[in-house]
Image (cartoon, rainbow, N blue to C red; front, side, top):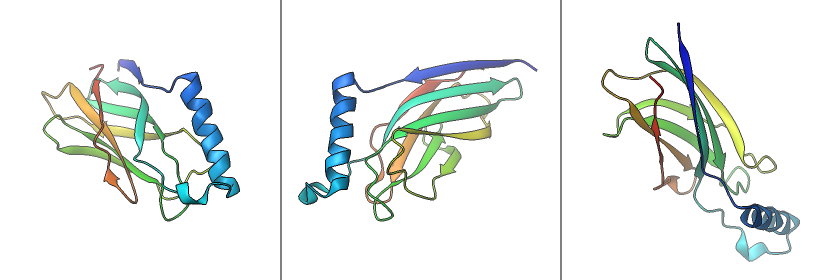
Length: 139
């Protein structure tokens, strides 16, 4: 049983990361109440381990300015390029103080002939984010 790993990263520059942290502190402290609008979820990192039997484990890192139960990143999906969902990780609570955060989905069955998938996130207000990461699988 062979396993191979592929990691795709799309991160924030140091300035943007610090800016996001400052914005979160300001929003959470109530000093900027009119700006309490989190944007869409962003997939910033995907690590994939695949086995010969076309089963893959995904570690996906999401960034989203979760505001609490009314607006939070609530899901990420693995889809074929044609849009067929082959795996979904439901996120059952907000991650207000844990950003970005990573969650795993194990043993996703990849259909024969598929060697690229897209990983997409969604949140409880905007639904599916228009930006997905395309991932070449290490099969």
